Image (tube, rainbow, N blue to C red):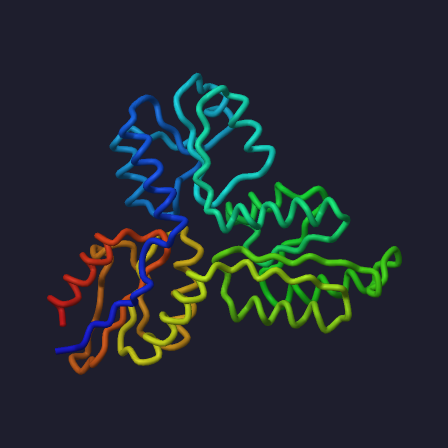
Length: 292
């Protein structure tokens, strides 16, 4: 019988649990409840909330039609402009933004106001990054990989209006970004001699989750990563685990399990993204035990 190792850090992080608990608490109070975008990147959780009457706002048209009720800000955070739009509806506004993301908003707002160039290391299409961009007083550069970091360095270096001796750059990171990639990008920016102020805003939970996933995957014959399709941190866990274990699977629920065991597996590893509820992890564990 194979040994099943489940990461202790798997599942809801502090910010996600706080956001989800906030919505369920508001549901108990009654009245129309809305979330501005999906509260977290987990389809199962969002579907359960919808069954309880929570409506997800996905457009400005929907927002403009709201009269009363409660609007809850998603855990990923929103821009200053979006925040103003929500408050303009007259509805009760509840901010469920992760406190670690709110800290990045303050850093970007203050440092951009002081004239520093803002660089966000992360995925430009991710709602957290879009929200962070919206708190800067100046244009923002988003860098996702080393190639983009080198290109940015070239642009700054060749800009006749600036020189590296007086170039002040404030760098922050998406909270769920790959820690190793972050260090690689910072190294490229720093070696050019700019005044780079690096704020490593990857949250501790992400560091721990990624390190533990890597350690388990390095020993596992099969590795399973549980997370939502649009979950950035789950996708990064899969990427990390896949490098350590060729037989790594990315699933949403136990229904997605389609394992092909060879029969000689010694260790099956399981981890899960920050938006994965405990009950889904337990269901996967139970089905894996039945197979092995």
